[in-house]
Image (cartoon, rainbow, N blue to C red):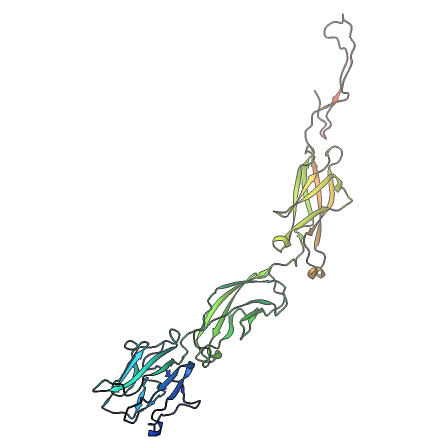
Length: 411
C-alpha cells in the first residue's frame, strides 16, 4: 500500500510522438485549428480552440509529481479561472485545488487494487461558469512499489522420488506469485533458494525446479525429508521481500534389498499323530523393503528329506508355512532335515549386481512320540472248543503289544 506522503503517481503523455513538454499559448494563426495531446494506453487528451472565443487560449502543463500529485495550468494565479475535476474517484480519492489546478490524493492508493484512473479536467470562468477550455481527459497511472511478498498459493507440498536415484533427478516444481508489476523494475522478479534440506536436494533459482542433490539416497536409512524453499523478489537482492513454503519429500521404495533369514537353522517339533495337510511350523525371512518389494516366496530345496513336507507363502505376514505331506511314525523315523529357500517375488534388474536376491536356511523337524493303543498280532482269531468243556478251562489265547518306545505292559 502506498501512503499519501509517499505516493508515486505518473502522468505519461506524448505530444505528437515527442516527449512531455509545456504547451505554450497558441498564436492567432492557430485559432480554429484542432490540436491533440495523446496519452498512454491509447487514450487521447484533446484541446480544442472554440470558434468565436476572442482570447488567447491557455495551455495545460502536465507534470510528474511524486509526493503530492498535481496538475498545473499555465499561466498560474489567474483569478478569473476556476479549475474543475471529474471522473473516477473524484471527491473520494482525488481532489483539485480550484485556484491553482493542483490535484491531490485523498487516500493511499494500491496499484494491485487499481492500476490507473481516468480523469477529466476543465478551466471555467470564475464569474460566469462558462468553459474557457474544452474538457481534457488524462490518465493517472499508479507507479508500482515493492509492497507484496512472493506467495506459494498451493503449499505445503508433498512429493515422492524413488530411493537410490542418481543426483539431479527431478522431484517437482514450485511456483510463487508476486502481485507487484512484473513490467516495472525488479519488484516481481523472483529468485528461489533452499533454506533447509541441503545437501540432499537443490532448487533452480529461476524455475523453482527441485532435484536430488545426492545420489543413491537409501529409504531404509531415512525415508522422509522436509525441505524449506524461499522465493525472494527484487531478484534476490538485499531489501527484497520473501515468502517460504515446505515440501515433504518421501523416498519411495525400490527392491534393493534381498530377503534374509534371521538364523541358519530352524527347529520344529511335530507330533507323529499330525494329519496330512496340517501346518507343522512357520519360518520367516526378513526383507527391509516395503510392499510388493518385500514379498517373499518360499520353496523346499530338492533332496535331503524334504519330500515329507510342503511349504506355502503367506503374502500377508511374509512367512513360510511348512505343511505335512505324508504320515509320520515316531517308531520308524524320529527327525527330518531339509533346506528352504526364500526369494523375492519381484526383482529389479538395476540391483541384481548386489548379489542373489535369495537366502537359504536349514529346517530340522523332530517327531514327537504319541501314546498309541496296543496292537494285536492278528486282526482276528478262531478258537474251537468242545461243548462239554468245563468252566474256567483255557481254550486259547490272543496277543497284543505296545509299539511305543516305552513298550509298556499290555493287559
